[in-house]
Length: 193
Image 1 (tube, rainbow, N blue to C red):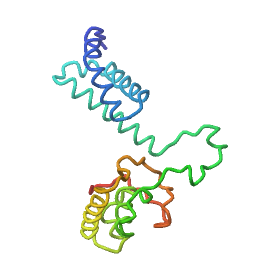
Image 2 (cartoon, rainbow, N blue to C red):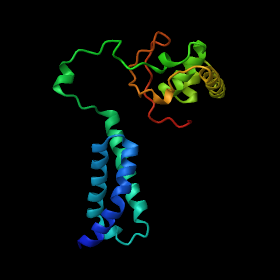
Image 3 (spheres, one colour):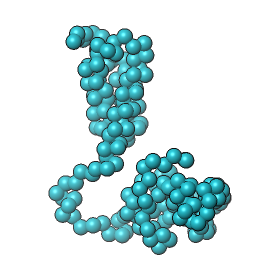
Image 4 (cartoon, rainbow, N blue to C red):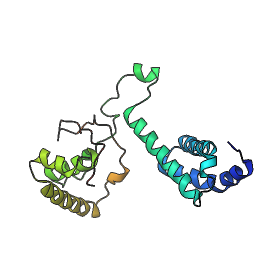
């Protein structure tokens, strides 16, 4: 293995700022972003001999970064580190929990409109699964979602409601305000967005 410090330093100085900026935008966590970019350059050091002649080094570096972030996201999705304090702490009170999407939707929406928005956006079900839950076809689910979104926009155009995009992601054990007592099923492979 041939180490070329100057080649590596040039690439590091050229691409580090771009990679760290992209990682921070994707991860919203400065420390994790720095760790991911460090791992990109560790990979570059290890594979230096094979990637040295690549014409588009930026594309290779960003591909490695994207793969590392996806891998980290998958790991964090299925495992959660708990400290001793977390294990001994009392469960949060209902008032302390983050509100569900259902809690933030305008009261003017019908129960059915709220339910379709909840199932699709918060539970992240496919139209096929939403249709099964609501006893309708996937195409009817799509149409109901379009109508519910239009009604939502109509309701918020004259009032100030929180934007659903600003609401934090919730676990599948969410209080639903009595509209639907079942938690959202796990759907990591949603394809028809």
